[in-house]
Image 1 (cartoon, rainbow, N blue to C red):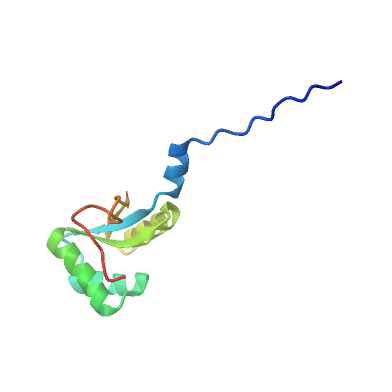
Image 2: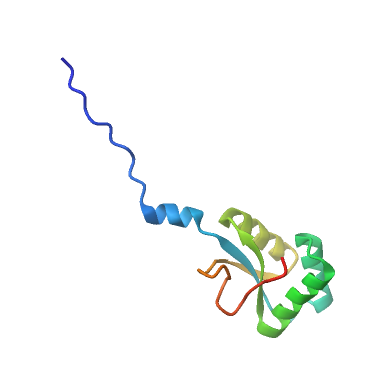
Length: 111
């Protein structure tokens, strides 16, 4: 007596799914205000990098103008960017490239 109607499943766009699963990175940029020792301390204290890794990241910021300091889900990277701002560092969030780096010329290494 009752006709059974097909149940429509919600359409999930492949692009939306890919965007949700995309990884992001936190990039710290060079500035003329913070000292190299302070930036090293922030990287060591906040991210838990060993001193040699923290110093290497700081030197990348100093010599190239930027360094990737964390990678992961967008929400986590937003927390890291906000924390870097709280320490007085200039930081941005960027999508990871296909090669896993924030850009072709900026690999973080040593994590």
